Amino acid sequence: MISGHRGAAALAPENTLAGLQEAAKHQIQWVEMDTQLCADFIPVIFHDKKVNRCTNGRGYVRELNLAELKALDAGSWFSTNFTNERILTLEEALTACRAYQLKLNLEIKIHDEADTEQLISKVADTIAANGFPAESLILSSFSVNAVACCQQVMPHIRRGLICDSVPEDLMGLSEKLELFSVHMDYRLLNETLASTIKQAGLDLHIWTMNKPELVAQFYQWGVDIIITDNPPLLLSPLS
Ligand code: G3P
Ligand code: MG
Image 1 (tube, rainbow, N blue to C red):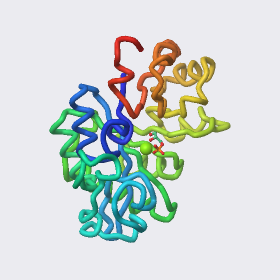
Image 2: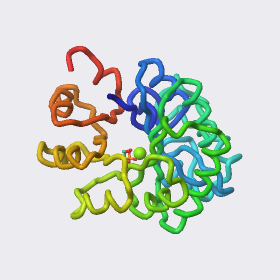
Image 3: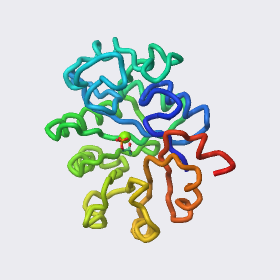
């Protein structure tokens, strides 16, 4: 199975409605998006700590309020075809995923560990208020603390640990956090590691894999979801 990364980051500005529309257009089931808090404690969909790279503004997401974030153009940096694309709130993203029948891998983006509890509490409130179905959702994070906090606050929602290195005691961590999935940097995966993860009963997701020539091998190793910037490229019959 294929998941769009930050929506469909090769095809539309990352983490925007346009990205979700691209993902839906290519009929993929899953998208990954990043969430963090803005200054007025509302979870928004944004990857970087600062707005500089992906909008026409400057400054830290955490120091800008929603009105200030909404005033930014989050599309022109990518292409003039996307001028006036706006930063989404988590609430808007959940509603759009439901409308487009997309399942969501929501990455809890921790730029400052001190924000963890507050962010996760707001994420939990937003998911509950939206009524987003738990079976269409995975919460994931690089932060073990954040995953543990999700386990406490939203035990009924599946959890994934994102890894940019192979943790020494991955299986111990997985039991402790009651993980549903491990989301591994695809460059770290080999057949043995894949088999260990699968034999532990975990789902195996890899990111961010944009190489059609590697698709068959990863599926053979038991990878469940490939997270990619360019879903149609990996779905092409040649891959
Ligand atoms: O979910 C996997 C991937 O999104 C993690 O890296 O930096 O793109 O959020 P990043
Ligand atoms: Mg991410």
